[in-house]
Length: 262
Image 1 (cartoon, rainbow, N blue to C red):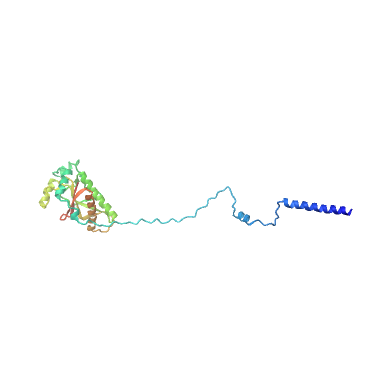
Image 2: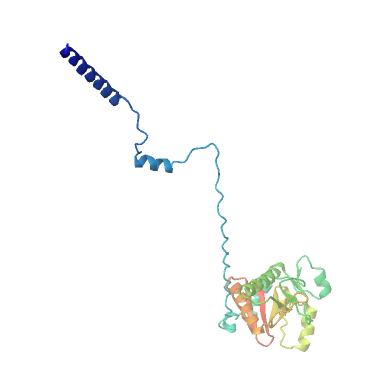
């Protein structure tokens, strides 16, 4: 009997031990005291929960940088190397062009008024002014010469601007001369040619020793030497002559550039 009870007792203990062993290895329950791996903890701290609302970040205000000003580079005033060499076109050269492009000589001012189909009035322009003391000619030119005069005035103002010089207008001292004007002029100036180019409406004179200052009312412009303005004007005329637009003679005694269109 004792042996049978002992065997039953040992068998019961073995069975209970086997059951506990099976339960231990088949259960995934993790004890609460067991620490989580470090990698999983870091992942949980970095992860951001996903929501349906999109919030746009407001950009920080940026300071506007000052726009640098383009430096103004003024062109220098150079003039020409020699007035005699740059403007050598004498009467014999200019008269040929005057007869080619001009009108037949006008007897008097009354006839000039009647020939407006051939001549252009040049007495009013923003690019040049007529000399108030002009007594022996009238402000008319053929269209070709009128265009040349406008070009000279525009180029002169543009050149003054790029050189930083206050605006001035060239002064026109002689334009179209009628036959009557030529006769009256020869009474006081025997050197005046009876075959003047001015008789054909192709020729005009521009003073180089005086200019008209362009100044709005109430404004004061700084003084500019006539020599400086003469240098600028000579540059303009030299360039137009090189382009084949005109013939030019530098008149020493009359103080002007004698210009004929071509």
